[in-house]
Image (cartoon, rainbow, N blue to C red; front, side, top):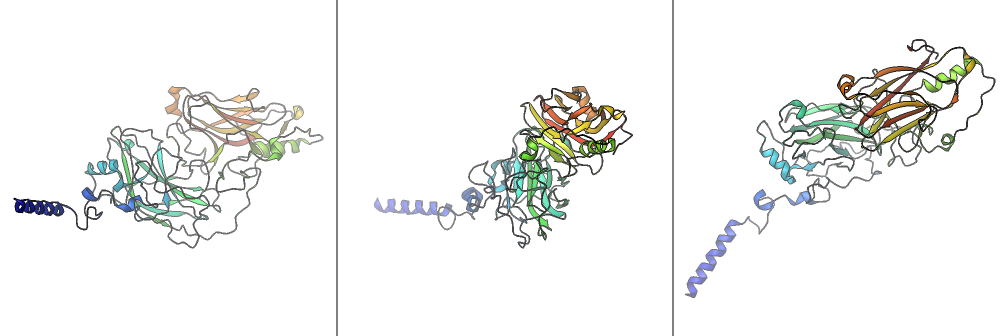
Length: 466
């Protein structure tokens, strides 16, 4: 009896050992059924920790600028290796390594239109299980580079899930922005790719190319009812290793003068300069008519988004930002185009349903009573968000205004989409600061755009005094 028990026990042990992978109870190279996710995905340099919403790696220190002689530093052939790209907390969605994303692998297994497929060990993915707002996105930020004076090219291989129409497909774009800015990138380039086909695009430098710069890969438009997925792998970046000269001094009265440029947005207008925070109205005596007109012209005709010499200053906590063509925004209510080619503009972005105001004030202007003619202030405005308006006033509270835009009707929004309007309004007689106020009642999300044009002597804007 004991002999048969020994034979049974030995046979049982051999059967168990025969079912296990070689080398013990766990071997990550044996199979994904036994080994689950390879251990390398759980390291400090991985895109995915054992948590579905955890970032690729901790957001790099803002001061960790890549050395200029570190050639090819932004290339990333595989996200399971140590790549200089990371998630950020300023977006709504996250990039994860495909092999460690259960939802990503599930959606990948259901795709049949691929001639080639993403490598689970190398690709990163954004997935959704249902419809999301079109502007909800996932950012992938590169480590900072010291400067970007000339365009950079970036090559990516990408795939996306199929949908009922082109408007329901996830979109991919790449941008460049200054380190530390809190504003959405404004020079984004869409990546028009086909599944599995490597695509190359050229990115223009951001506004402050001599300062630290980060590349941003953005995935958005995950609106499909059944959920969506966007896969990328094998990032190649050319011309990131540029020679950086001396940094240009930024005028303290127009750009944020905070000394820590790596943690403060470089495109915000200065709100701290004591020289301009409290401005006293001083009488200007014995000025000739020509001098008065020159002062009015130089102050009001100057576009603060275009020139650093404009005499306009932010008032309050909300700061107008500088915009340019192809900026990333809501396609229905955002400002994505310039009033005319190459012109920059001011943007007030309303990203919450809380009523908000953006206020800027000009230097003091004097409109004399004895000038003998009416002066008109001409400008471009972009309003395509119901419940928002632009006001030009003589006070920051908006109680003494000489212009208020019309609130667009819901029925007009599609017709007015992506259109700038040109306005000329009479300037009141007196000595005052002109306050530009952008307001939103909180009903809808979107942008307001404004671009100063000129001062004229006619309501049609033909007779420029400048």
